[in-house]
Length: 64
Image (cartoon, rainbow, N blue to C red; front, top):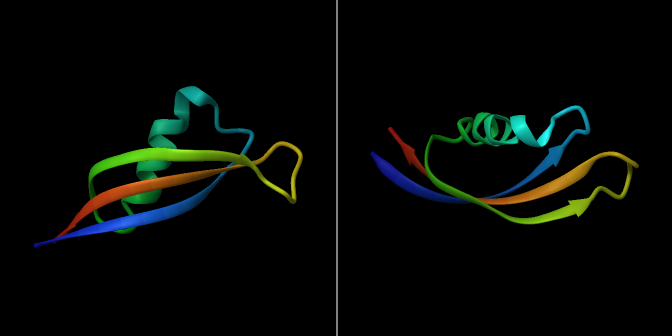
């Protein structure tokens, strides 16, 4: 078992509401391991789309 720190840049599509955002982020983090702690550190408007946004997430995951 290992602990790993991640810095992710996640595209936040306009169809994902704020109420579904937590599940959306956790699903993305789970690709790398079991999420132990995570935080949104920054939100920016995507340059190539009017409705999309970018989330910057720092996470600590457990890799079995």
